[in-house]
Image (tube, rainbow, N blue to C red; front, top):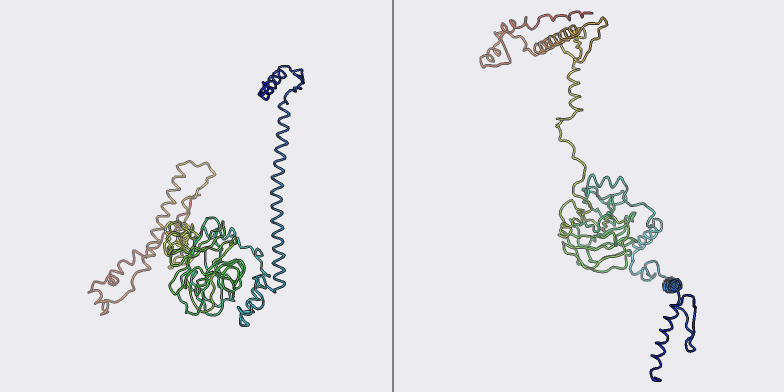
Length: 458
């Protein structure tokens, strides 16, 4: 019994708890010197659970806040260290020192171009110009489809626009952009650039950038831009000094494709239908297709108006817009059938054509068929019908008179039978001439006096 005292104690405790629960008015009792209390109610259990949950929530929130504060402190320290390093070593925004810039920018023109580009960035930061699609531009895309995209060649660019998607660079450092940005409604957009003409020592930079962009800078050399260099196969992003080589050198006839995912800001490249693995990230801007060159060359762009070399873009329809818009083509020249305005104009001109053979005194005035005569003396329906029949008869007579006048005005001139030329024409069977006798015999019938209009019955 002494060896099993824990089990005996537990049994006694359970027995006591049952006894306490059986006595609702008793808060506690003693059994063999042990004080037994009633268990806590359900309300007390709920309060304790709520307190425990609040403690856990505060602990989790405090831990997350502490981690966030630690990251903020580390970021601030890193920025301070980077600024101190730039200040001590004399580095610029690209992390280049004066000595490195002098090595990478050997001549005065390149250094001046670099300084002007930095001043341009400070004057036009991202967001200073609204570049999102306006309702008018969206309407233009719906009407024209992919044909709404075209390159803008300004006066400060030494280039010529051969067509909406073909540009010829005349020489020097130049850059052109499209009039509309890349859309953002779909998950992927894609376009291709074909090199039409390019000397071996000229570099073509193909990519995308925000607007406005310096017209004398290569794509990828300034902030918020990325471009592929055709002579080195490297991609530059936001800097002229740092570039990563991802592909090969492009020659005349090669096609470089650019894919853009607006939701993630990822840009990737293809060459002649083969996609490169490397990507460019962080391009969450309103981007415009941008092409730059440092010499004379020409290119042609395909925004989806024809088939892509990259097959996947054709299958998934990654073009910038629909091939055909909602705008109807203009009518064919000369096709005026079923056109109310043209038919009305033609009928009006025919009705208002003056008579060439008679003056104003012989002009004919016809009453329209819809004329209604109002009689004040209470005439019957029979009289109205008779008046209508008289008006119709007058109209028929006048129409016959008018046709007779027109036919008489087109008669051939008089001639003598003894005329040898007229005799030869008559022998040959010409229908445009007729003898004098027959003509004179027909003449009195056509020149009969026109009967005057009968007086209207009042």
